Amino acid sequence: MSKESIWLSVQRVVGNNIVMAFDETTDIEYVLLGKGLGFAAKNLTTLSTDDDRIEKRFRLEDREQLMNHPSFFEDIDHKAMEVSDQIIQMIEKRFNKTLHNKIYLALPSHIQFTVYRIRHHMEITNPFLYETQVCFPQEYEVALQALQMICSAFDITIPEDEAGFLTYHIHSAVSHVPVGQLVKMSTLLGKLQKMIEQEKQITFQQGSMNQVRLMIHLRFSLERIVQGSLVENLLIQPIREQYAEEYILANQMKVVMEKELNVSIPEDEVCFLTMHLYRLFRTYQP
Image 1 (tube, rainbow, N blue to C red):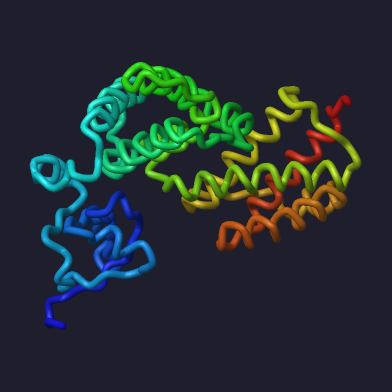
Image 2: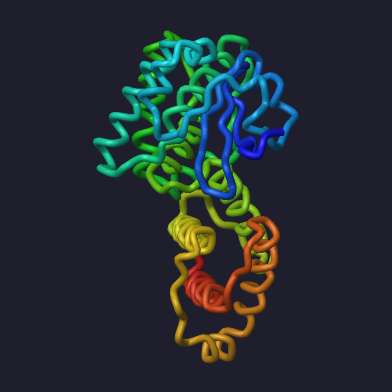
C-alpha cells in the first residue's frame, strides 16, 4: 500500500459500480466509481484509496464532474435521475435551504429501488408512517407530491407508505441529519410511547392531541440530543422534588434512548422530559 493511500469508511453501495464512502480523518465524503466496485464492497466496511478497482474518486460536492462521468449512469436509471432532480428543485424552493449533497445520489438510488420493488410485486410497508406524518408535516406534504411525480414518471402506482420513506430523505437533506438516524429515531418514538402507556396503563388514541403533542416533544428532544444543541434547564432540583414519579419514568426512558442512540443524555434534558410527562398526565383524557 502506498504512503498516500487512505482508508475510507463504506457508507452506501449505490449500484454495482458506485460506492459512497467517508474519510473519518477529514470529514470528507467521496463517491467512488469502478467496474464491479459496488458489488465487491457489499460485504466491506472500509476501502483503501489505492484499491485497483477504484477508477475515479470524487468529492461529494463535485456533483457536476460526477454526473458528467460516463460510468455514473451505468447504475442509475436516467429517468430516476430526471424525476429526482425535479423533486430536489421542489424541495429547494419549498424550504429555501442549502441541501445536503448526499441527496443527489441517495434520492435517485432510492427511487430506482422503489420502482424495482413495485415492478416485481414486492410489498412496501411503513410501520412508522403516522409518526412520520406527525413529526415532519411539511416534509411529508412535499413527499406526497414527490410520490405522485414518481408514479407519473414511471406509470406505476406506489402506496402512501412510500411517502414516509421519502420524507426521511427530504428532512435529511434539509436538516443534514442522516436518513439512518431518522429511521432509528422513528423506531425509538414508538418504543417510548409504549413505555409510557405500559407504565401508566393508558392508551393514546392515534391522532389525539395528547399523542400528537407527545410525538412532537419527543421528536424535538431527540433531535437536540443527536445534534448536541441542548438547552440548559435551571429548574433541575425543583423538578426532581416536585415531579418525583414522572422523573423516575423519564430516567427509565433515558436509559432506552442512550442505548438506542449511543449518546449520553444530560440531566437538563431528562428534567425537560419530566415536565412534559407531568403536563401530559394531568391533561390526559381517554
